[in-house]
Length: 354
Image (cartoon, rainbow, N blue to C red; front, side, top):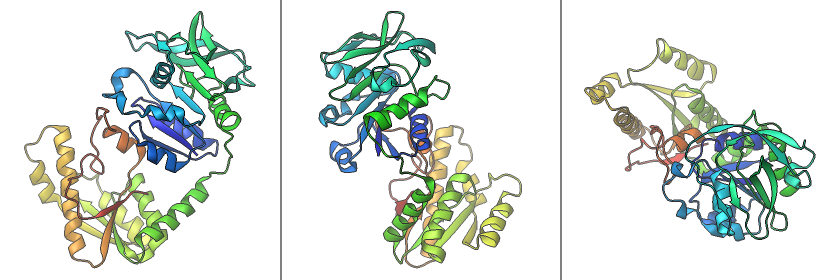
């Protein structure tokens, strides 16, 4: 398993996808993730993924003890700055976000570039380079006379100012694979089928004989969550579809047809058009609208819970973009999602987000 510490950059999800495409399990967590939890996950390697320094508020929350764990580490972008500074190095401070493809000369004796060509076109901020190499490290990639990657082979710690996770970075996936298999010695034992089975068993164990409400919108995220939980607990899942007055034409009928008639799920449709529209009347700020929608959704589900017995869980289709865009610790929110940043604090459910 690979653990990605997200520093608030743009590309962490791409990195996670590249790793899973290579049949290795990974998780993306905030850079402030507690050290005891990092150790508990027992990862085979850690990737510190980040963008520009102004993407985050307080990088001091990254526990520098991560560099003392004895685990292989690949620090990308701003992550390479933090790693380098910890060991006594220094990077330049860019004045612009001038990202482009640069022709980079790599040292193929490094395991990170083993088996690749000597010159690669890789995506990076051309102003953002390594100025001083820390003691114990050596240069393994540069363009012109600019150092853009370093390694400490003994510690298995690598820093790269370019982004191999970008699909159009030349041999970018091969660089990630070299870290996974030649440096971390990961095994290709993760696949979606086993992940689904494990998720179903985990849901069975957590929910037990209780019932669960699923916040079903009919979109991909909540639909996948609903199907997973239905496979786990069957008719103990009650799906609630809220008609809030903002649906597409015939959307309610399509959802009822698919989930009630075809999937044979317990589906309750709630006509809440009037209450939602009244709450939103006169509100123009998009962020405030999301908060209102999130709170009203929860109130609707609580009302439905009172009509049923043994409902202890709320199922939501939350994905990485929802969490990231709603603002990881210290990161400015892109937008709040009603199933993350838009939730009220007084929720009378335990959340399950498969």
